[in-house]
Amino acid sequence: MSGVVLAVGDLAMDRADYDESFVATRDVLADAEVTFGQLETSFAAAGVRAPQARHAVLARPEGAAALARAGFDLISMAGNHVLDWGNDAFFETKAHIEEAGMQVVGAGANIAEARKPARYTLADGTTVAFLAYSSILPMNYWADERRPGCAPMRAFTVYEQIEHDQPGTPPRTHSFPHREDLAALEADIRAAKADTDVVFVSLHWGIHFVRASIPDYARDVARAAIAAGADAILGGHPHILKGCELIDGRPVFHSLCNFATDLKMGAAHAASKSWNEIRVLAEEWEPDFEGLYNFPTASRLSMVARFEVAGGRIVRSGFLPLYIGRDAVPRIVGQDDPHHAEVVAYVADITREAGLNARYVIAGDMVEIVA
Image: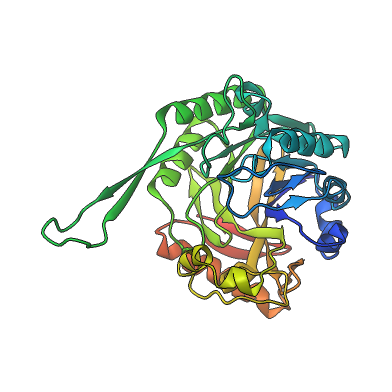
């Protein structure tokens, strides 16, 4: 009998009743042996907004308990919103999550705590570990020996001028992993793999809103993580789906898109320079002043990563297609729903466009990833 591990995309509820966000998925999430999510907000009574924070939501403390009721077991705080509301809100958020009976991974009071894996033993005795890191990092959001924050997997960008005699020509963009961060990630994975059967690695990375595109550093980090012993990689941050690949037979989800992510928008926000600069990155993105889901059209298509684990290994991996409407409530769509085919076709298209090797087969209760 296989145990089921589920992983979802970004979590940032911003509504009066947080439980509403999970009305359509609670049973599926709760039935899994381990359900993982990526937090994009803070659960605190108060906070001081960091000057480098861009879009920052301070959610109410009861949001953590809502996640537990929704079926979550494990929350990553390794992301670009981890310190949006300061150190006190960071520690309060972590405490609320743990008090609700969930584990936190990818963040802590110092770098050693941030790099510590979360561990579980499944019903058949298989042990699993989770590690989490972020490449999307406002200044000083990463932990160090004496500072709280998240586990970093930083990267550098170099712009190559293509035509030197043509001023203003768009450059080629190259990105490279931070050597020390990559070495630490590899060491963490090797250490976890030494005494755990299956290791999942969450990476908050990638290029937000741009269709299909995957940066060089993400490809490098994925290969290094798999070589170090990772059994699956869970990508987040871009707010749209990205393609999947298999490296040495192990699945890499480059982006799980959003899950329970509310985003309200007013006329002033829609007219702002900062939003319009980001808006042009997406294929289609129109503001919705009455809805709760102000993301690009492609963000309506999402997924829950699903893994069947037995005998100390992942025996099957794939995803459950999701559709997210104007109410920002994620809904799992079956084969009888036209959105099911829409999600599968979109993922296949962007996988091919990115030059990745995954193929997708509808196999019973999920879409399976095959080579």
